[in-house]
Length: 441
Ligand code: UGA
Image 1 (cartoon, protein in one colour):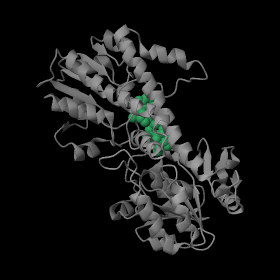
Image 2 (image 1 turned 60 degrees about the vertical axis):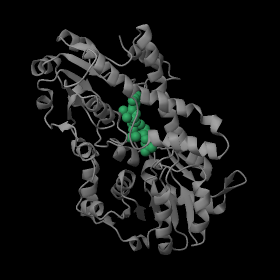
Image 3 (image 1 turned 90 degrees about the vertical axis):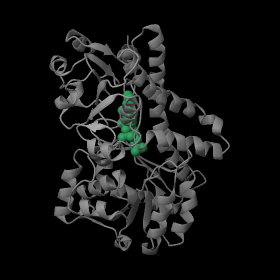
Image 4 (image 1 turned 30 degrees about the vertical axis):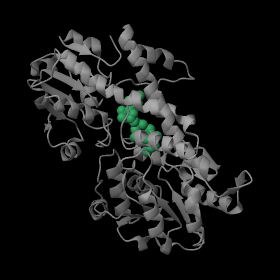
């Protein structure tokens, strides 16, 4: 099927390449000439395992192309909207400027019977408000949220846990037009549906809410365990053992119970804030008032990691050499948007520490935003002569591959703050380190 994808950031670029990899003919459209030039050469503009391969393959097959010219969308049957919905400057609500611009830019190139499929994360009610503009062109709007995780984006796009389609509905079910649209999407995602991926057809509001409530739930799970870490800190309990123990209950589950410096990235933080803002607008602010608390718990963990480092260094980090391992908001990503790791590094620098930061993928992005820090590519070089080491992104390079005895030989002091509870505390202690975890004795 011929498809267009408007917006070639994280979501759009991966979606375009993944759709080409399952056999569709895809054009990706973005206003950013540099991004389009890089994608057209088959070069991924960001770090995402597996993306490079499917980009190169798609371009070589002739099924995948990128352009800045919106008229290239003409002739495609389904047009995916994958532009960003960042937090508004100075507010909590989502900024829908790019969604409106993408839809308005696309309208002149729509043909009768086309489908516009919104993938961007939007406040509930957005699809309903956009739909008349699309219908006026004889096309249909569907909301088809995306659930990909950075670092697993290719796999999550080709083989998602579930597919959700919010289609035009009336009287508790899809209209005739809605049912037809759902069938076209079934065809788009056929390889995945054939393997048993659930395909849920619903109305616009439910589809939009599925996305934000999934992210709200994940954020809540992380902040829940971080709240338990705060209690563990004053009682001498160990939050990692606690998480293992409650995680054995299948109703709770161990995943996303990793206590540490909390969640960041381009999705969870801004999505819970946008959800609160939208609920307020709807007069139901109290229903998700707990999300403010989730956000507050999350941000407190960054303070805690900084305080622990200060305490560990005897009450001040001034002119102390602190090596920060990690800058990305999570491993397998070079994304530093709202990264707790980078935030902790910047705060330590603000307190007068001589911060050296290393990361396997995110140094260039971090340096652009925070040129004041010292960046060192080589992990061992970064560790040299450190008074303290703080692990803030649980890359395998630190979690599994860094031998504590080897690290001890490189550093001046033997203080390690494990901001992600990802190190083997006993092994680090045995190698002579004073180990500090998050919510651990
Ligand atoms: C998140 C969701 O997991 C995806 O399902 C969703 O599609 C995506 O947002 C989106 O809205 O586009 P992502 O932002 O890639 O995906 O990252 P996650 O894997 O959810 O991690 C988010 C943050 O939580 C990271 O900073 C991570 O370090 C932190 N985290 C995760 C914890 O602190 N503890 C955990 O146990 C798990």
